[in-house]
Image 1 (tube, rainbow, N blue to C red):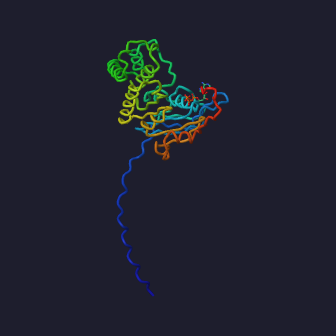
Image 2 (cartoon, rainbow, N blue to C red):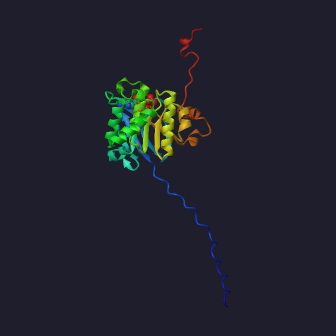
Length: 276
Ligand SMILES: Nc1ncnc2c1ncn2[C@@H]1O[C@H](COP(=O)(O)OP(=O)(O)OP(=O)(O)O)[C@@H](O)[C@H]1O
């Protein structure tokens, strides 16, 4: 007996081509398992973090959380006990020149060559970066003007106020137009007018494709300026991601307190301070 012919197989339905998704670009900053101890004190433990291009990340944490230690390991200022840091694919510890060429750094408690004037310090920074004199002169004048330091350009940096030192340090970090800025408390001691100028500079830098990592204790500042947040406490990363992911529907302040813990003072604490 002959079997009936099987029905002809229908043509597979024509599926539309999947949309072409761009390859995700590699992170500008990649930290892997960074660790630093000072004696028995764990300053940073197993820190792993990616910072994508064109973003501004706010690094938050209570005093002593490990922020400065983490940023110092990231910028080649402090040798980690373990782990690695890459800046645009360059290993900060194996290829320091490659990494630092793309990096602008404002360290905390900077020891600057403060027997130079502001203009001389900027020129020195530019020369260190291999810039030519004409570019240095043009960019220095622009940075000094933008940061409100024109009247102090010829003054020795040792005679600058804390806020002025912060601003000339920021100018030194910017002069070679880096791709990644790492700024440890850039707004500390800076007056509100200069603070607004710095915000504008950083926003324009990111809009132009640059990437910023900054540490701060000011939640409102991070909330209004940064699109990514990382929270560190006792050397460990408690949360990181986009601002909305980290906030999880709360204010950043509340989320921070929930994560790191707050402590209410009891009625009797410092009772002697009350005058009545
Ligand atoms: N050179 C050092 N020697 C010994 N301990 C250190 C050293 N540097 C930092 N530490 C310790 O490591 C821990 C992390 O300090 P770090 O300065 O990184 O914190 P931070 O988050 O930047 O603090 P802050 O917000 O107060 O500036 C602290 O307990 C600190 O005492």
